Length: 191
Image (cartoon, rainbow, N blue to C red):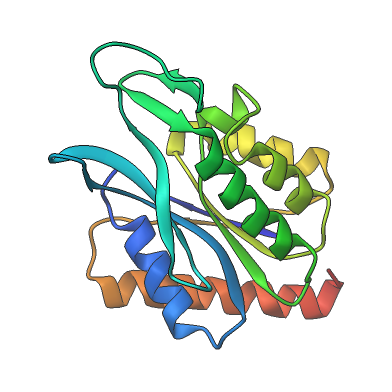
């Protein structure tokens, strides 16, 4: 089963997921959180954080003037995506697919995965083929495509949780309630 978390940019989806992971007994939740943070001389970057270890590393940064670098997966808009950073994240996410008792968070499934079949795509395929419960952040404009992808792999999406700028405790409470619903559905119907 898959729970989709959606909402506008900077509405607190990642913050609510981090709080959910902290409030869930270890090792009940694994996966990757992605945040936009200052990096190198105040330039913005996308940083991945391993939920289990709290280690973080670069997923993407703003393109420097002067071009491309072979160590990067691809460039989209102002960002260049780091191949090694995604490989590390994919290993962690795919590892979670092997344990149906853990909930795996993928923050976020976006155009990289759905349009270009890159980014978290290799690990996402492992998750879709597994019975591990998944929580994925998905942009509102991509929800129907992601639901269709889940359906193609026989995964149900019993709930879409829309996050807005409500207080963190309320956002976390909503996610905890949705996670309990998923657990109850899993017990009722099997993985």
